[in-house]
Length: 47
Image 1 (cartoon, one colour):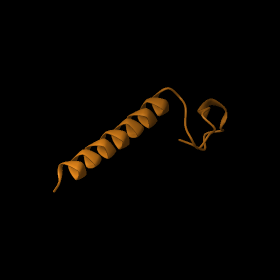
Image 2: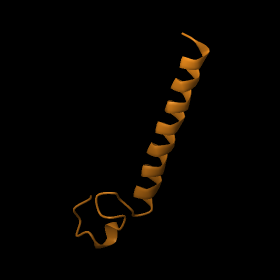
Image 3: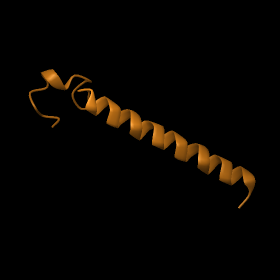
């Protein structure tokens, strides 16, 4: 493996981790992509 391949793989891993952490944080704060970022008014469909 070349250093460039390792670097790109590491950057992708960090980006995916940040996206997943953001989704978890939003869900804990009552937001969800499926409900237009407002689970309080979705009628329980995103739970």
